[in-house]
Structures are given as structure tokens and as C-alpha cells.
Image 1: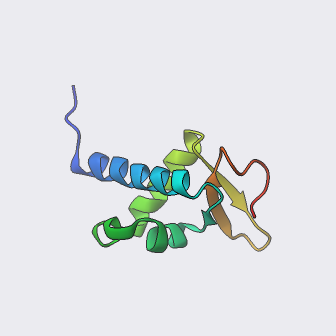
Image 2: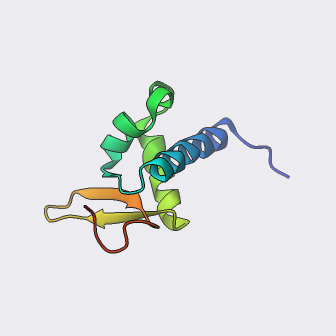
Length: 88
């Protein structure tokens, strides 16, 4: 059995923080940079943008978030439960 690495713990913490944010703000939508800078609160200084991007990808894969690609290629992330097919 493999021990949980520090990176796995950090990834889980970032996923949890993002999930809490969208649970409290179900219609929130933002770019990966916006999530990194605005959604993580006090966790922000302790994580990298790359880790946030990994967390977003994992949450999309798990069906918790949706990724929307806008004209021009900008990617937005939002709750999969409250933003079905559109972003406000």
C-alpha cells in the first residue's frame, strides 16, 4: 500500500477548497487564474497555480466542475450541478 504523498494531500486540500467555494457560490465561474487568485482564500499563498490546474482537471473528471471554452479560447470553470450548459 502506497503512503499518501504531500502532493496528494495538497491536491486533496485544493479540491476541497474549490468544492466548498462552489457550494457556497453555486453560480460562480472563473478561469484557472481567477480560481487560483480569488477562490482559495488563505490557502492561496501555500499552493501553486499548477496545483490548482491539476485540481480543476480532477474535479472536471469527477463531474464536480464543468469546463467551458469561450470564443478566443478562454477556459472557465463552474459547478457542474448548477451551470448546465451555460455560464452566467
